[in-house]
Length: 119
Image 1 (tube, rainbow, N blue to C red):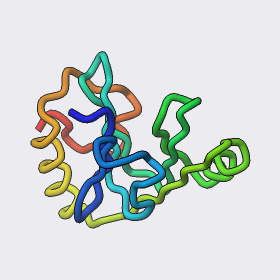
Image 2: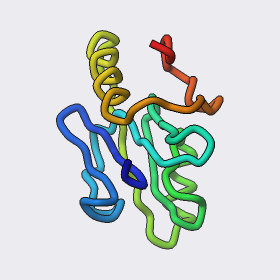
Image 3: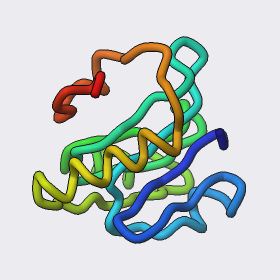
């Protein structure tokens, strides 16, 4: 797996394609990053995401977190999620899990909005 992958409804972008600042900024569904304990971790279900190398890479946040990032970061990289229907999410998430492969475990933050993660 790449160091990180941003999944959109209609495609994906990873560190193999460019930097976080090169990635499309709208329509994010999932951000997956390598993780030593679980093989990868996923972030999803948020309105806003950002990349900040000095804070460990990708993060998800609320509106205040976005403002904080824009004010604090030397090189801000704000991105925006997009809601989809529950049915579309289930199909999309199944495809992403199949692409990423089996996880070795789940981080607590990942369980937000994940229905039946072991399916």
